[in-house]
Length: 98
Image 1 (cartoon, helix red, strand yellow):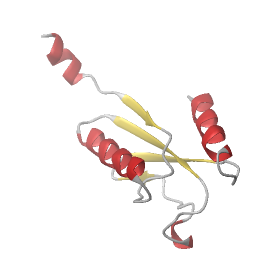
Image 2 (cartoon, one colour):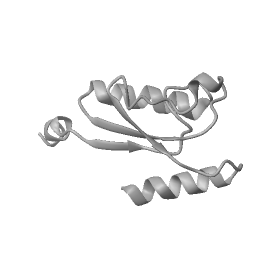
Image 3 (cartoon, helix red, strand yellow):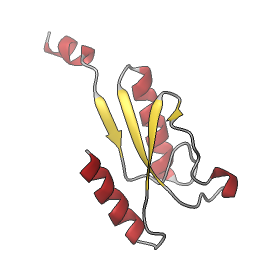
Image 4 (cartoon, one colour):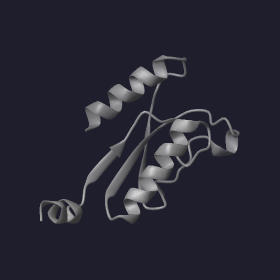
């Protein structure tokens, strides 16, 4: 009975730490994309906090104005374009917003 109640509860989920989705830039991004879209299918509300900045696939993919991807809400987070600083500042901003 406890599992039935847990299964019916819809969650609000924040995904952070990735560069961006949709993306095939790295392993973390692939996992976040797969998990977040599957959780939406299950009825959960998922928000992915994406880093602003250059996309490895080319300029046409930089800072997409899209606010949703397959039901996943997308939010862009500003950061400094300096290796290492992007991770710390991005994670801090995402944590502060929540």
